[in-house]
Image (cartoon, rainbow, N blue to C red; front, side):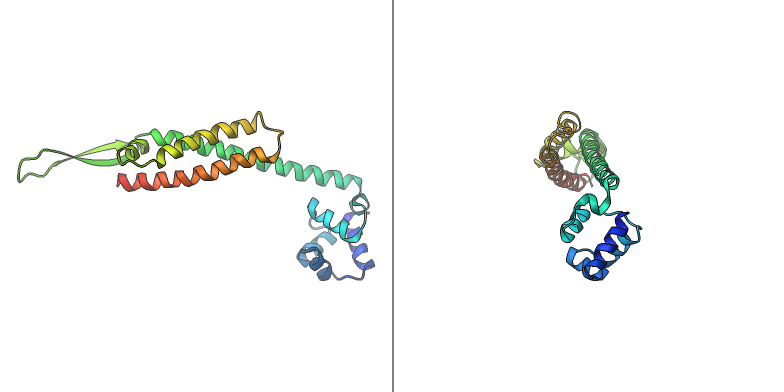
Length: 196
């Protein structure tokens, strides 16, 4: 018997409507309807909630093959998400490190001294974010650069050395990434302010 049939059978046995069951499980009625019509596969967490609510064994509710398939699918999705976030961290950090030192910001300088009555000669120069922030005594750029290097190295370690370690290792990488993105935003905001 399929999960959809078991769920429908258990719900009717306990004299519950789809809306009542959904309310007790903190789900929407449409989710229960989709589960019962086999239009949507339940998450592992929702299957566990339903099994606990009806006080039935998980294998009874979904069958051995479906349990293995659901666990495997959820683990694959979780693994892909983890890899995507770490790869995003590496690419974002690497791009910032490169852009930080590239002279891509157009600035204007004036040549002095000037003879009275003449206009100073305007010289167009291109400077890097690092140079502009250093000239204006702003430490955000250095902090962003150091954090980006940390994110890059730590994310690479999470993908290789810490690959099978606990979530705490990846959480540290994500926290550093968020802090780094904040300082990167400040760096770019100040750089554009000084360049134009």
